[in-house]
Length: 402
Image (cartoon, rainbow, N blue to C red; front, side):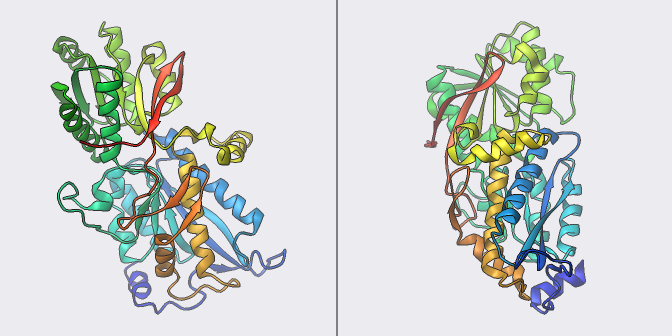
């Protein structure tokens, strides 16, 4: 990997090192060279319901590009790796994808904490990475993003907006929409969960609300009895949770069964039918924010949703599937500007990064373009609530942090 990285950086890679030649190509220009798009997400275990939505969202984009011959002379394929929502595994996957000279772009990961361990590896190899779901602000704007934004990696992009906006959107809805005044805030101590809950706390207080208690859980916890008693006795009228659905779907069940009749409100990491399926009737009234607007209401996403269902792909397409499709399409379009007549230039990866930075097109989730930090210019967010056993949108718009 070290040798390959060095070669890529100096631009000395030979013409045929990136992309593989198809000697058995049929059908005109298409198929002369195969370009691989990597996918990294949790495909088993924790968070896999939403991770699989990313994998198959990307797969549909590649299938569409190949069917439509979007890039003459190029056949695309997906190489999906399972990071199990573990940062160290994500880093290993990044190394594996970088070492595959056919890979000209990567979609993923799902988790912000995993992304922090992959960014440097991709940047060293000039390999573009577009996450459809990472929301931690520091990934694009640096650790001092609240006072002095500075982009850490030019190879990193995302089609999901940040928690700086998601946390503010949730705080505004909790205080002004639900008229909640006393919040108890819990997080899972992970990059995404801790960051999102911190922003919610700050914005809820600025709205005029009071945070009357905070606590943490560990990923994988299943017994929340002590925490439930603490929340119940606090007098809170809402519980805000920063983390994934795997823990919150159990927490809300135990909270309601203990007699605390307050809603649990979380972020996009909880937005999956699996949450409702596990929590059952105790999920009724709970809320989440998620990126964008409901995919089922987007006319441009109609074929995507139909294909996902027809193929009977596993996982949840509704959370990040359409954003994975658009992230993949951004890479495909960039490759189309770099690879001409099936010929891959020696500095293809670097050129794909530049092409993604300047991309602008109408995706199935909305306008796809990136600002100077690599963040999406699409700032839409939606609040969903569990009503009659289903997530139903109750408010869409953009956030105005205080």
